[in-house]
Image (cartoon, rainbow, N blue to C red):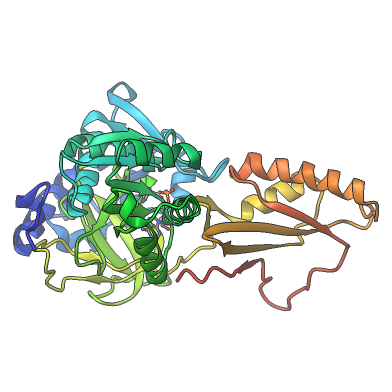
Length: 435
Ligand code: DLL
């Protein structure tokens, strides 16, 4: 199959050359971070590492890790490596208060990020003749902005739809002949269902490819989306901390995502010991951003469990591949594309006068995530009046929506009815079987 690349020289560079490039960039990046980020300088000093000790990627293991808690401690400006006057944008995670990650970008950072997304679009068959419908959320979330920028770089006609409003999505898709769809896999599946209900067959819509990510999805789901939309569905991975989507993207082989290694240096570590694991072993994915200026993270622990592979790929790309993430080392859930931590739910419960006796039930019905929270009333709150319960549920639901950004269905239950566990409480029942 004829292959297209966005930046062929990099994407097909011999592995030794990529490693040499990474080494050069790493040395410069460590110096930049040490000189400009007091927070990381302190971590390095505590570990007794100086920039001169890092001579190439073989010395990476000497550097300290960064984790989400460091990002919280350093919020908002503590990890900034450029003056604010040189930054042109922020983006942020879908979580709210406390857990929010705010990432800063210089124009150079945006440029690199958009290149990464452009590589993904071209790998999915995109050219300047395509019409690319971006139905990831725009605004603080990185999905819309990233793919929008990538689509411009490729020269596609870009439809900046943002998420939601399915009627309008379908109208633009059909009237303007979208050929590439970018959104979360669950939204793609939902759009597929909605098109089917309207009597649109896969042949009657011009879509040919989809670029789906931001949440876990299975091979079954891929098959289902490919059939209902009549397209090839490609995975894309990224996180706000490292720019957003485009850290890794799938090619025509659809057997894992090529990591844009010229910008992101990947390691797999044992999440318990922090020891670096050899290629092919499963562990926590750690990224070092090699040339981001404003918000460069060294050895950032993603909490995603993953495996890397350098097996030769038929697409001709030499960039290392990551498997689909196989779970997380923390308790973060991704519900309707939004990152949700149980601790956020506990904070709301306590603020609203409830005890943290609750259970979260997540399922997927007709390709849509359902999100229910059972919450015990305190004995003094207990009532059997339906209208009172409904009003309490509504109030708690609104507080949850404010904190989480999405609307769970609240079910207040009588005191002491949620099973107590002898060990770790079972707070989350995830029936989606995404991994
Ligand atoms: O989800 C960035 C993104 C936008 C990626 C659009 C792809 C497409 P965050 O909101 O910071 O950023 O969430 C990052 O989402 O650590 C993973 O746990 C999960 N994730 C992202 N992509 C995938 C994927 C964006 N393809 C967190 N498969 C990451 C599985 C994914 N999980």
